[in-house]
Image (cartoon, rainbow, N blue to C red; front, side, top):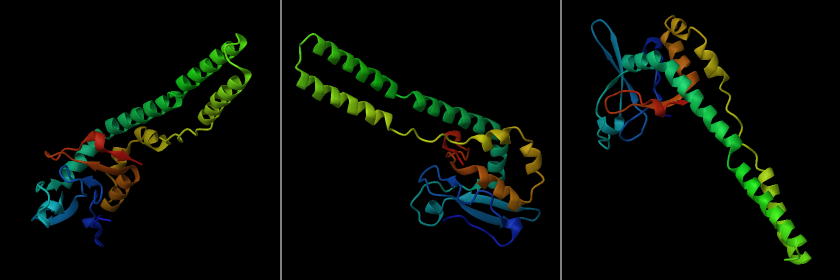
Length: 199
């Protein structure tokens, strides 16, 4: 919604709508200036510059953000793959295994009490039914679908940097939008790795 586009290809903003302000969290907007020898692209928070509701009044150089991403993209992706795979491994084991074990142990204890005559048949049937129903509830819980990390892993195995340097600016913008949904910078205008959300 806040992305800024230009009809002139050379004025394409690589990260419009992707960068979050470190203070207020809104999207930074693109800013363009013409120098004698070059075009200067940067990003700033309109909450600070226009609305005066944010204290982050610094301009962030597009080129510096681009260099940070390119220099560290391998690390960012590898860390994300490890993070997702660890979460999915934990989810696959989850505490359901523990819950199921406890319920089955409770059923065995109930069987033992019934065999020893410590509870009536009616009590046994009611309690056993409750435990069976709890087991069925756990069994019907659908595990969240695993995230497809194929594209990110494949990117690591390509010479994406060499290819990137041959792209037009419009295509560079498309490149980033295919792999990154958003990220934040800190007050020193450095990318916060933990904030990067990949597609």
